[in-house]
Length: 288
Ligand code: NDP
Image 1 (cartoon, helix red, strand yellow):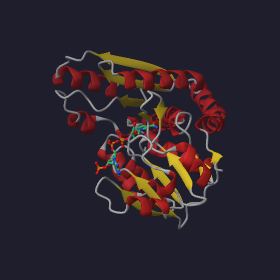
Image 2 (tube, rainbow, N blue to C red; image 1 turned 90 degrees about the vertical axis):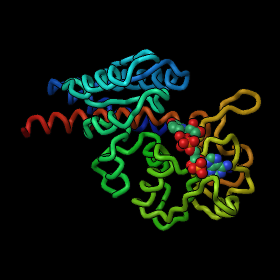
Image 3 (spheres, helix red, strand yellow; image 1 turned 60 degrees about the vertical axis):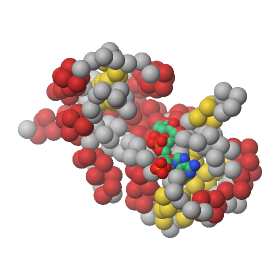
Image 4 (tube, rainbow, N blue to C red; image 1 turned 120 degrees about the vertical axis):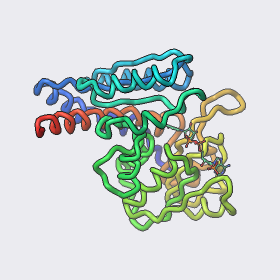
């Protein structure tokens, strides 16, 4: 039966160091600050925002929320974004995406200061992730998976690692982070043939497809490490992952649950990025 990889345990291990770092910044006159830009009031966004605010507060990071009306025009949206981007007291920006259909995210993706881009929406940071250059910010969820694997001392070097999902937010950047750790990475998607066989062959299997319980026990190899990124609702209306937990748990050596898995760790990674951004931005302003 697999050892449970709990997001809250990893978050707890990160907490003290982050509090210390935020304290040091404050002693130097810098209050680390995250700006959240939200258009409308989507339930998922509100739920993530609550978690992020709580985590920032716990660490000692100021969190400002710009709540914008659903009918905001592209011009007004860009103006707000520019103002936040130019505000020297803001160190990190989190924009909830996808945006509403009438809004284009491309101009703000190009506009965002790379050092404030704490959830990796700009090409600069994406390129760094794909280049294996650790100086940028990876998307928080992808990095949360890496933090979890590291916390549980999972050796990735040379290991068959399969990622189910190829989005630019999770699957692809995560595959690049795994590759950087010298894993042998296979990326699967809806057109993949023999998905079950490929999954079963994996030493480390990451599910990021957004399909409730699609990874069944027969798709998990004996002793595999299973990380479940999916957040879904099952037929009974309960939160569940992409992995059929009960069956997969029996086969795995390590397994992350949903809820209380990767999702509980994402805001800690976000906090870590904001602290880093505050340090790097203050450094770049003193260098000038
Ligand atoms: P997307 O819908 O953007 O991408 C899903 C990917 O999974 C696609 O590449 C798709 O393939 C692939 N896929 C879907 N169904 C199957 C299938 N049956 N077999 C194989 N591949 C499949 O989702 P995201 O990447 O944004 O998110 C993935 C999951 O992670 C979701 O459940 C989301 O809620 C969750 N999530 C969790 C976060 C957290 O903090 N824990 C944060 C962000 C997301 P194709 O490209 O061919 O369509």
